[in-house]
Length: 619
Image (cartoon, rainbow, N blue to C red; front, side, top):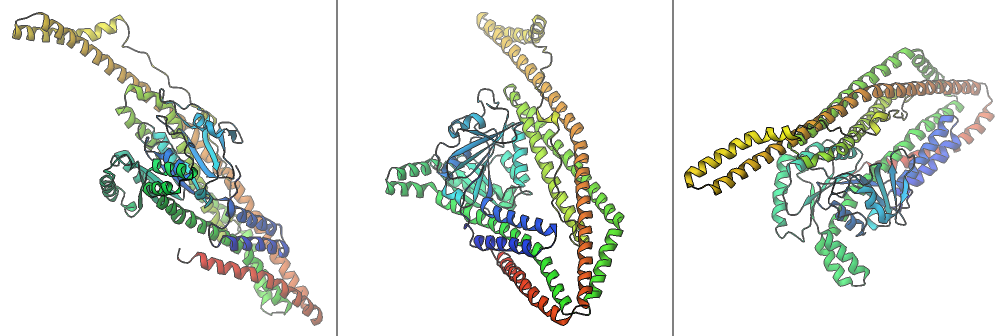
């Protein structure tokens, strides 16, 4: 989904965009290799991302904490996200800026998002409160675009499924998402203290995201919300001390919605009062200042770095050309030394390939261990939920495990991408940036895990005549005992008789419920075992296969770049030798022309250095 957003949300956005455009032109004009053309394309792509990328704020919280209402109030669209559904959100929903309201759903098996009516979003993101299953089990995510002042500042909100209850798979996905988030917006109920599962989630999140903003919702319903806020801050200090200094905002989504309606109706005075009470202006300002603009600064710095990596080598080449035209006596030796160094790298082909193979093997070990730990974590969480859940909760298990698999896979993808980038940088540094390339992640979720089988219900022993007799006999004994004791104590018959019948029926019912619970837990445990066995069978070979393909791609790129470096040095050396035999007049003419080229490249390099200095200064 494309978007149109202002490019001036950070004061240096426009200067960096102009730098990128000028640098791409310079590299394209003065570069002499295919690699320079690629560099120019990369710089232009970075410039495009500066106006398109947003700071990603992931909104999390347990079910029924008011996350969807909060998002609606933040973007000024009261009916955007469904809020009247028992278990509202079953998939991730990305909300970003767009000139007009629109929505699209990503469906399993489809290459492109499917446009949907914004009024029908609930049909794609909600769960059936009666069954606990999604209305659409083929939808993996939904993206919504709409005009909103806060979103236009460079913010994208991600609404997530609840992280409490039996839905441990939702927690796995949310945790994986945090690796790519700029900030976490943690939504807390204004009438209750933080729960154990909320604190446990924050403990896991500490290693994945640095910036957290806490939001206490529904303060209009709970007069004692300040006491709740104080106790929650104490709990954070105890259980997640990293976030002890994080900002807290107490808000009322209802008051913000009322303010928007009053403003739309022309009643500015009422709107101002309701807006002030809502607490949203301070929250929105914090999201923009603490998250969006800081994230923008990081992206700007990355863009300037891309420019520097392309322009500096070009400038060095032109400076050597200037020295050659002045017949610098030391240049020939320098070029010969460089040629020997590049030739030595190429000749030591087996050395860097051995290093590459070793790093890939180390990465595979890390990924395999991380994957096993993720599966174990998922298994432990689900087993704990199974041991405490009731029969009505087991219907959620299949969807929960499917979400858990997606979360485990997302974590694996993140770790693979980071590991390959690290290897590329290391090998590239050793080979004069010969291998500093973007390496694709070739792993894909195995087909057997894309659509999980339905749970199988085992044979039931609690139905039938003999099962009834089996429950009746111990219950009958307890009922007879109750009858006898009461009969002796009271001297009557009828009251003890009915008490005995009640005890017998109650114990029979309890025994049946316990047996149903035991059988349901056994079914759930068998299903969990089957799914984790599938994971442990299907994924490890995919890790090996994906890393092998990435290694082959990286090897080919390194070999190509080494060959290009050698050709470039040989060309410079031949050019210098040719200059030695030229007349002074011809050298002077070429010197003047080259000096103009150097000035153009130098001007861009200086601007990049200045902007890099500004962006690396205090935030």
